[in-house]
Length: 180
Image: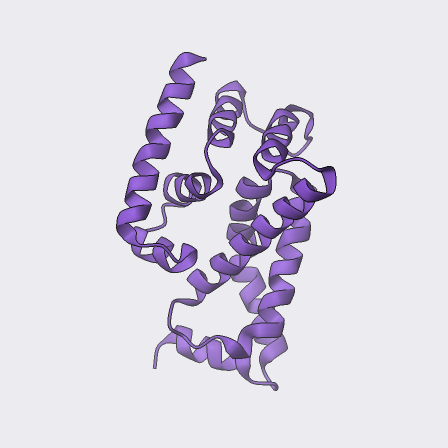
């Protein structure tokens, strides 16, 4: 039995769930925060989405069947929660999720938690021009170095489609950066 299988059993057991869940949060909160932050942009929103992600994981851990790695399952929940959050905010402000995302990117310089320089800001603006799926694929591959096989489980898309999305995203980003 692998360490992950034992860990999942501890998460699913009523007697060990809380302690195991605390360990899970310690193990994954930073990686999930940065994954979420790349999607929702705002620090405060990332905190909210991270909290919602962990609540959903806690409530649904018994439904985890182990068909993927725990990490993939967590990322999938975090990704879906992030997209839901963006769409909710866009709907509330009556603009498209793409326009909402671009407005967040434009406000990054005022964000006290953004520590990037002008090159990083330019890269974030370039990423913001991509369709949502390409943004996800680019961020997961470029920043998180997630393998296409894992990304396929997280995004429920074929590896070939993900490779094509990444390639197209890179070309669009290069075009954006050279034209600026």
